[in-house]
Length: 253
Image (cartoon, rainbow, N blue to C red; front, side, top):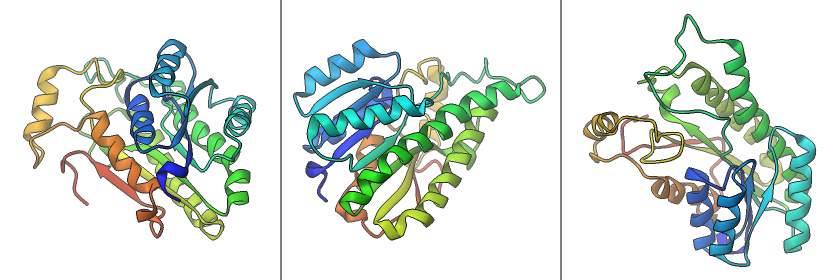
């Protein structure tokens, strides 16, 4: 199915990387549902800017009832099941290496919070999408990951562990859902210049990362979002269970 024919839910789509993902899909003509938790003003402004093929709906992805209502609203508004889910929602987190929790002080509660947002949220959205995708004979699930579990240049223990678990879920879902024509893949970025989460990152860190990439460049949210379009497009119809690292070549393999 061409991207222009798809109905896409982007979780955490009101701000930062989520907003860039919404813009990328809308720019290809897709109908897009912006899921948000607290960013109502940003989400509604983005929907207004992008026109009547984009709507903003409040839902906390850690609450299954709210997620089910989100998908029901999407179907009611556009008259078709959701074809594509982008699991982008992130539990509150700031990429600030100086303020991070260290190995001897980090709590299980911090881990649990990240697992709630990254894994439980993705599971809820994926499960809510399955009936409609099976009705259509296929679908796309795209999870947002990180290159930190391959190259933990800053040891964000809780965030990185949750994203590593999300990669495992990506692959087990891909194995089970392939016969239904549903592909499940991950797009993993490094530090992006700039999102709400990376706003606390010192400029010197961005410069150091750029200097260590073959492209001498820190990836932007828009560049990351363009890569995510591949997994939604017909060009990726034979690709599932994969993790595409989009970080300017900082991590290879």
